[in-house]
Structure formats: structure tokens, C-alpha cells
Length: 356
Image (tube, rainbow, N blue to C red; front, side):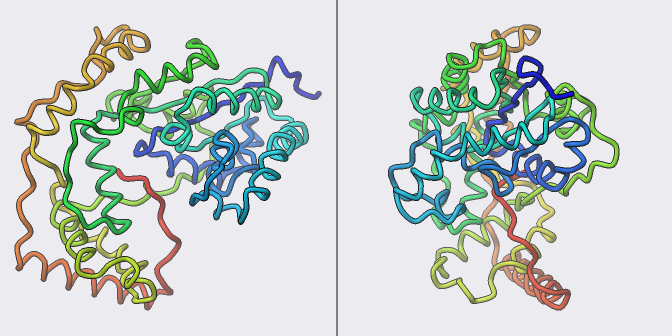
């Protein structure tokens, strides 16, 4: 019997970035058939692995950006045609599959879709697909977000040392602002806010917590991918950053210093994680203490206004400087691991930008 619209729920997972989003998206992508048999549709429309098409739609993309390339869109006309067709494609897929739950996921919806008018455009469009929309978002402490974002930037070619600004991008770190904008469109009662911390996850597992947020148990037979893009330790990250200074990204293309070599770095990266001066991180957290308290009181009333565990400058110190001896050790390990990977058949598929 076909599902009636009032019974169908669309779950919109908006990130945030650096909270295991790539792992969850890859899991859903690789288990589409299994999930559909359990009543959860992870649509193909607007997606490769994640639904980046939703971000293009929300932004009414008027400038070139990396999301266009993912869908082979070359011109503004191409983007306009893509956007005009997207909701119709989603509606058709939803009707064809006839599942009671729909899952759409893209972390750029929290990092790039920041203007109220763009959020409203997306929600209005999705309501033509399903009337009942619930937003799922995971939060992590601001100081962890800064460090994890920097780590990913270094892997992507950044060569500058970390400099924590007191004017960090407000919409990215101010969770009260982020949530308020989505609340205005879907209602607070339709917001599921979770904390990306082991002791706060249902069952102590991100995957189990995510399915719990969808109102279902983890399906039997689910293929859960390994965590994506393991974080480098402090020495390895400094090694890569210095390498970026000496050998810019444009010169690395085709050089072999990617793929298996970078995966090898992840394998030998077993020391303490990179951090920055605790006084700077404490100052960053202090800046968002009041807005974090507002979020805690709205969504976690049992936490007495404390969203994250207290952070003090003594909890983090500057990572030690990379020594020449350690750099040589890392270089040898990278080379041996990269050679082994090459003999096994190449560098494997490119990992996405999800640290820890």
C-alpha cells in the first residue's frame, strides 16, 4: 500500500563538518538497497555520495565553485537547469521507492548555506517532496573544530602555521546562530541536535546514534566503512605542512606524492594529536560560552547550560617542534608504505575531508 504524505518523514542531515559526516554518507551510499528494504531511502537525485546538489539549489549558485564540477556543470545556465529539475527528480524517486523515511545529507548545508533566504529556499523546495522535514545536526567543541579544520587544510595543501583568530568565522562556530536560522524554517520541534562526543552518543557509537536519530535500529547486515581520513599526529602534520611550503600543490600533481604515500603517512601517524597554545584555544571557547549555553538550555536541559565539558588552557599546550630526526623517520616510513601500496595496485580511492 503506498505511503501517504503525512506518514512520510524527510530527515535532512546538515553536518556540521568534522563530525563524521563523510563516514555516515559513505555508509548510506554503499548500503542504499539494504536501507530501502528497511524503509529508508537515500536518494540518488542531487548526490554523488553526499547530496551536494542541495547546496547548489539553496545557493542559486551564481558563481563558480567546486560543487559545480562534481555534477559536470559548466555555466550558469547549466546550474539553473540543474536546480529547476532537482526537486522534481527527488519527488519522482520518493514516489517510485515509496519508503516511509527519506535521508538527505550534505555538510555544506551548515558551512555554506548561511543566509536565511537560502535556507528558506531549500526548505520550501523540499516541502514539495515531503511535507514533514526534520533536521539532524551534530556539534563538537569549537576548539576541536578549529584544530580538525586546520588539519584537513594542511592535507589539502596549506603551508601556513595555525593562527587562531579572535574573529573566527562566526556562522561556522556560533551554534546558536546556526540552529536559530534552521529553527525559523522547520520549527525547533523538528530539530535533532546531537553532540559529537563518545559519552554523548547513543550506544557510544556514531552510527548507532545516527540511526537512533532516524527512529530506527541499525539494520542487520549493514556494511559500515572504516572512519574516513584519519587525523595525522602532531609530528606528521608538521611534516606535511613543511612539505607544502617546499613543494606547492601545483608541483605535486603527477609527482606520486599523493595517494599511497599520503595513506602511508596516516598508517604511521600514531603519536599525540596536533594542538595549539591552550591559552588561545581557551580564549576561543570563552568567546562562544554564552551562545553554547543558549543551545544547551534549548536542547539539553539536563546539562544545566553546559554544552561541552569545561576547557582550560592547561588542557592543551603547543605541540613540540618537529625534529630533523623525526622528519627523516617519517619520510622513510612514508616512502616504504607508499611503495607497498603501489605494489598492491595504487593509491586507492580519494578520501574525503572528515577528520577524526
